[in-house]
View 1 (cartoon, rainbow, N blue to C red):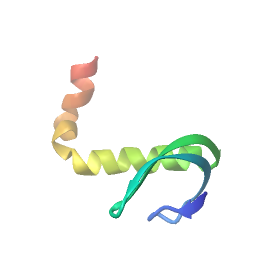
View 2: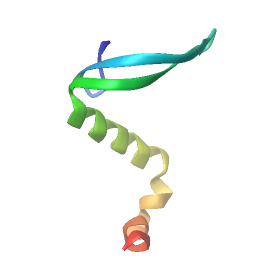
View 3: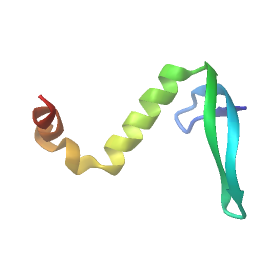
View 4: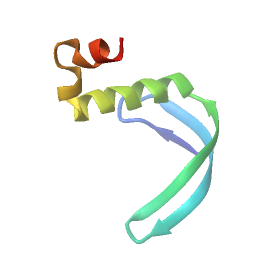
Length: 65
């Protein structure tokens, strides 16, 4: 499976379907051929955007240390 992330980075991976419905499909990533670092960075940035409160004033970092 190959696709382009919204930030225009290309990813190539193998996936194994887990379940599907009329709303979409869930799959397990079995191998990433290219773009692993780009995918990691994209997912982390999305997490930071969705959970911005966790990252305010470095709170998350301070709690982990």
